Image (cartoon, protein in one colour):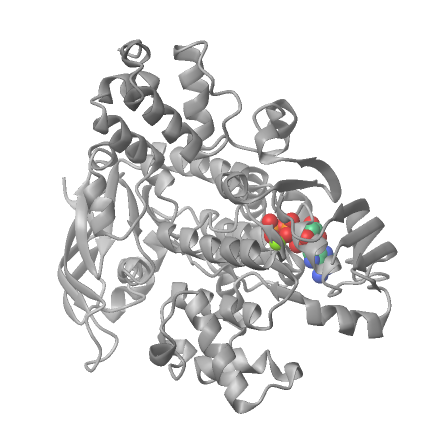
Length: 263
Length: 293
Ligand SMILES: Nc1ncnc2c1ncn2[C@@H]1O[C@H](COP(=O)(O)OP(=O)(O)OP(=O)(O)O)[C@@H](O)[C@H]1O
Ligand SMILES: [Mg+2]
């Protein structure tokens, strides 16, 4: 299978006097993968996913998205159609003067028929719980509602790959759970999903976990393997997830087996 | 300074098409020195509640009192503001000064400190949040990491030495260690100086770990007011309004199901569980331990 997204020997720095922000990144993501990216503040996660839709160009190395080179300016628009991105700071992403206008903005631009736009918007608002806000001006929304609006604008476009940069940071626990259920649904339908998160407990949602440390990839593999190794989390300056913390305590008393029986 | 709210209503943009009653009929008291967590789903009215307490939004009806000050009156609000420290959500978006020192000093103008006094104060509070003053005070706020910037914003609020600290999701967007660090700083100041802390969070595990009281807002009303130890007992009330079990709560449930008769019902903090297990295994009651296999 050909990867849908690949970064080969990618290095990035914002200018030549500054240290490398990303170093020696090699990653190949298959169509239908669900990748979770975790790492401490400043480890390079946001820069990393901004390379994946051509928003940032690597200083060295190559980025290929759906068979197109991300550094080819002619492919720019085609890449944006395939890859949707939910930004970390929702406010940057909001363009419309009402929720309704904001959500339909992208589809409108591409000349989609009215009823198609309406039904896609309705569907997304329902899942995100924004249905009674469609006439509200975005600046009057609460913090979490703004974040949901930014997510809605991307989902209605039904992109093939979706990049989420800390999409649940301002959501309540239930909304976060619903968002992950929505991702599972998209994933089921064949969508490739890449999520950056600060919530270590959320790493179990995807099938692949990438851990970043100081601009490099420190771990790339199954989340269920990572959970057994608290040293990787420590190396990355992260607090290990609850399960790993309990494992460490159980290990002191040779009780891993009972722990597993509780889990 | 105690905080009292009496039948308070919070209304946004009154007399416009977008008018919205975000809070209704809230009565509560927060005695001086309490550590209160405010929880509730998106749009339930948490930010509105803390803004009313801080006098940043005026009660459409009812009374908000902070210490002796009735917050409906403007001169009173000014006096109360000296005692209040408010950290808005994503405070880093509001940083405008060119250096970290100037950013913190800008919030201390009203104290009338000498240059030397100001220097000392800034240095002291940078250290409280774990940043080396020499290294950071002349740095540009735009060239440091998100976690450091959040600490600096917190240092700015703490440096005014408020009696009441109000924080809107202070740990959102921070990595797991940075979150623990910020909360530990807040807890330490709270314990050392006895200040009141009122903070909004979506993380139940934080609220259970750090607060003495959890206020739950639901659709503009005060839905529940409880101690962290009551969370498990009152789960049936909380689940329908969007509470989701933390890994610790799920673990305790499983634990009790599998090993009936263990004294874990009253636990709500991770270190309680850890000491329980450790005691059991180390304290010689090997039988009990073997019972696990
Ligand atoms: N300026 C405003 N004008 C009109 N309505 C507003 C305004 N600000 C907030 N609201 C509405 O008031 C309600 C409560 O908002 P508030 O910001 O207090 O919620 P919150 O509990 O802090 O939510 P979140 O967890 O998302 O931050 C929401 O329905 C919101 O849309
Ligand atoms: Mg809020």
